[in-house]
Image 1 (cartoon, rainbow, N blue to C red):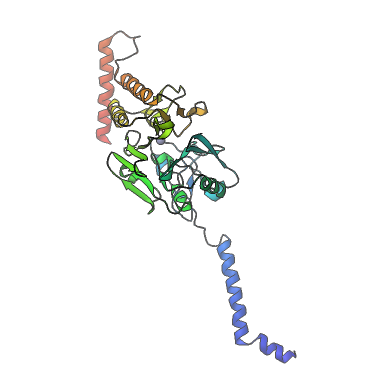
Image 2 (tube, protein in one colour):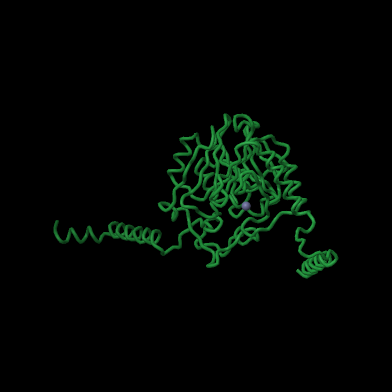
Length: 345
Ligand SMILES: [Zn+2]
């Protein structure tokens, strides 16, 4: 090719615009994959494990952690993403009994949530949720038959439930409508239900609103579990204590705020309707308990509830001061002070 031919080809309008286009594409791709454009990420609160909608920077607050039932780390609110968790965490899947598997993350993440996969002839459900979700987990869950639905007891277990729904074909997530105000990542997969109970999979499973810990707290009843004697999966209400012959009911576990006697009696009444022999709770107590009451669970729940109510309504157990009149006055003064404070707030 002569130099004249070369220059006419190289500097022809067509070739010049092609080169310019290639440069533009390269610059654009560099901008996309470098930090030039802020990346949209779904941030996860490290304290409670709940995931927020995609944003270019971490949220300034976590609704769940800042609630009086939870807490914010003394060093501030830390954030992560699912992608950042890859490699650093692994999900353990354990068979608890026939057709029931528990899932938890190692090392412990957030409050140490546990989720459960229940297989029924009419579909499989993920009960409660954990934040860590990687391809290995998806593959293993699919080997167990996949998922048809998700249900979550209350906001402390919502984790990355929307991503779980997407990973298994945009399956429905059943949440009680009284929890709506606590949903931090709204999504079309979330199906709110109302009322006292909701049957799933033609009655193979039942959601029961217990209230208490949260107004919309729910438990899952699996009547054919425990060889047909019935299983209750409770989230953290009732919560199995270190002594597995005891359960408890709390407004806040980390901040030790009890529920009232009236509320606990309502929770007990709502649980009474179902027959179950075995209870699984979603947080393993202090690392010492096993998070399961293998048998006689319904009677244990009832007895523990009655003990709780008795403790709240009993007369003063401090008998070191025998001046009953003074004790009564002290209580009245404290209650007056509380009601005055609340008038000003
Ligand atoms: Zn909770």
